[in-house]
Length: 279
Image (cartoon, rainbow, N blue to C red; front, side, top):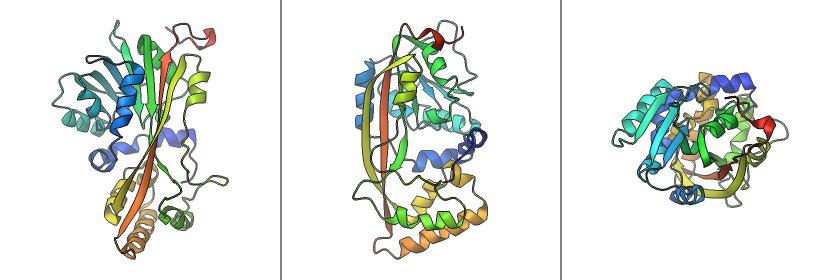
């Protein structure tokens, strides 16, 4: 996809609201072992207080709610927030707040054991995101960040490299000098450490595979901001070619590898002076 300006990113982060129901249905579940590593690294006990940044429809919230945690979910999109409330209605320890993380404020004395973001942290204003997470954590609390992205291990499906010619044709090709991502996921370790507010304690990569039919894969693409933002003619051309190429395969399926880099960082009790958030 083409590179986006900061202004475009601010606009695109709102596009997911139009895909609230599809997102829950077609976006992949994160691996169970990711949650196990997270709970262990953050030292979470049942009843711990969690703050989720950008919960969407609750994709990452449900597995943590099932573990008995108290979770406050922040979601800027009204349809996504409504979907999260429906999906989490059976958990009385979870509340969903419709607001941006940058504008939200907890009760005066409320602090959290964990602030986490699942495929959402990259939409947060980097000038304030780490400061706010530090502010709302208790001493000794943790920040956790991870995101599900497309990776290409050595045994990956060649479909994704082959379809790039269509993205180029419709003006949505990869920026010069970039390419599809091999295993070796990007992470936020430099930004975490540079914030002066956290110390990284865990960085663990997870890779898994899902097979999609043409229609299933197109439904997935319709939950990505860049595809939602495409003109109708661009989607028609791309999706038509996806259907045609997969129809030529004996099984009609495409294999997509997903990857997520789980990063857990401990709140510094004495951050670098220049990094202290305003009180």
